[in-house]
Amino acid sequence: MAQSLEKPRLETCAVRAGTARSPFAEHSEALFLTSSFVFDSAAQAAARFAGDEDGFVYSRFSNPTVRMFEQRLAALEGAEDCLATASGMSALLAVCLATLRAGDHVLCGANVFGATVQLFAQVLQRFGIQTTFVASADPQAWRTSATDRTRLMFCETPSNPLMEITDLQAFAALGRELGAVTVVDNCFCTPVLQRPLQFGVDVVIHSATKYLDGQGRVLGGAVLGRRAFVREALLPVLRTAGPSLSPFNAWVLLKGLETLPLRMRAQSEAAQQLATWLAQRPEVERVYFPGLPSHPQYALAQRQQAAPGAVLSFCLKADSEAQARARAWRLIDRVRLMSITANLGDTRTTITHPATTTHGRLSAEARARAGIGEGLVRIAVGLEAVEDLQRDLEQALAACTSC
Image (cartoon, rainbow, N blue to C red; front, top):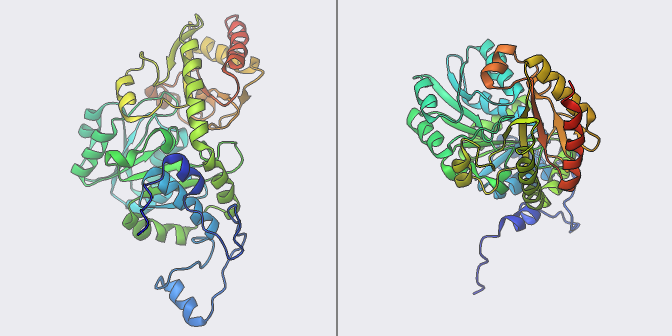
C-alpha cells in the first residue's frame, strides 16, 4: 500500500491547493469566463438547481475558477469551507445578512476601517440592528458591553490604522459564552502570519483586494468558516443577493496566492526595519507597529502572530491639530518613491492620511474616540529596498517640520 503524504505545508498549499484541471489538462488554472453552464438533461438541470446533484449552475454562485480560489484560501486558513465575494466589504455584509435580524445587537472593535464603522453605525442601524463599539484590546470591554441580544462580534486584528491587537482566544471564548458568531478580519496578517480559526473564532473574512492579490489589480473578498455555516447560512445570501466574485478576478487572485508566503514575510521584515528607524526620528511622536516592544500588545502579538505584518502608522510631533495636518500633508506630498493611495497590501509601498481618507467619512468626534488624529500617517510597506524607503521618508520628514 502506498504511504499517504503528510499534510502539505503552507507554501505548497499556496501554489497547489484547490487546483482542478479540465479535460484539456492545462497546467495553469483555467479561466472559465462563462455566465452559465450546460446540462445533459432537464432532469440534471432540475437536480442541480435543487442542490440534489453537485455541479456548476450559474456563475453568480458557482464557477470553477472561483471555486479553485475558495478551496485554496480555505486550505491556507485551515477552514472547512470558503465563499468568495466581490470585495472585502461585501464579504462583511454577506456575513451580517446571514446572521443578523432586526432587534439584534453587534459588538464591534472601535478602531476598524472607516467603511466598516459606516456599515454598522448607519446602514445596519436603519434595519433595527444596534452596534456598540468597544476598545478592541480590552477583553473586559467586550464583556461589559454585551447584551442578551448580542448575536455578532467583529474585530480587525491588527486594527486599521492604529495596529491594536485583539486577544483572539478571549474573543472567541466570550462569543461561545454569549452564543454570538465571532468574526475576524484577517486582512492585515493573512493566513501566513495569523490563523484566527485556530483560536476558536467562528468566521474569518478577507479583503482579497489587499495582500491576497498583492499587486493592486482587482477587487475581491472571502468568508471562511465551518462548512455548515458557509453552505447553509451564507450561500443562500450569496446566491440570492449576488455579491459575487468575478471569474477573472478569482483567476488573478489565484496567481496572487502563489507568492503570498514569500511576500508577507519579506514585507513584514521590511516593515519591522522601517518602524524601528521611524521610532528613532526626532520628528515622530509615536510609531504604531506590533513588532516594536513599545507597542502595548507586543507580547500578545508575539503569541498569536508569526510576524508583525507590513502596515505601520506614526504620529508626527505638532503643537496643534491644524499644524499636525499641515505637517502630515506636507510629508505625504513630498514623498517621491511611495504611492499616495489609500489601498494597501501592494508590492509598491503606499502612504495615506487616515483622518481624511480611509476614516474621512467619520465625524471628528468619532475619529477622536478612535484615536485617529490629524498627525497620523499610515504606510503599507511593499517590496522596495528599505534603504530607499528610508531615504524617501528622510527628505520628506525634513520638509514637514517647517510647517
